[in-house]
Length: 361
Image (tube, rainbow, N blue to C red; front, side):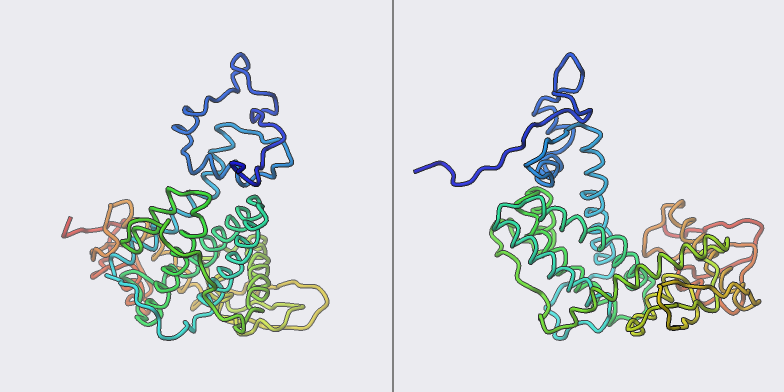
């Protein structure tokens, strides 16, 4: 009986400078030394994400970039979920109904998509396609879903039903990811799985199944992709106009796009707008109404105050659920309650400089 049926090997493994590895050239890395410095999961990922038909360039700089772009992004996303879930004493229970939040629907559809891609790729011994699909999903999870969902969870969130839906979604995402990643990065996969379930190891888990019905809104993935493209155009327009996102604007007109009206709230929140106007056109473009009124300026000031207070809390090493007092030079009176709610400040006092006052250190 042969010891294996299929084996894949790289054309050649070279130093990251493109030359063969030699001690005298200083580009040679001994395996145990590399595993200790780089980390076994990162090293495995570096090999697996590479097309075996091509030469593999290997070195510490390249491995560090791989770790930053994937492993740290995955871990920081998981830490965001765990830290907030612990504060809210969240316990996963199988949801009775699918979430109505469009971001939850989108990320679960993306999860199904990557699950199918990884499964099909592994059946063909195509690890490179599988790993790249997982990288793209983790990037979408971190830079879009979590970024757009930060205010939905944690001690400052108000809507308990939506908070629970977000936690349920994140739990399902990370549980599925822990299983999908197991053949590639066994150590971080086990860490995710055991923390989520309390069970002994991910190796005893079944291979993931699809989380959402195929009859669900599969076109949402395409529409959300268009929304993100529109948001990029909006951010670019703001930059050209010299108006930061913290400053609320009255409206933006979208030319040459339709069918995304149901996703309007996502765009409004991402670009800090009050209204969207859709107009027909041949090419996709956007135009901002940059006229500022006293009311808009007050909203922009409020957002800047909230950001400054949140940063000051971090600098003061406040716990995420710690209620504090603060002094700041001034604030719009009509937004005082919002400022307090979003920064966990019990009392605002006027003073020359922004100061955080902690009572329970």
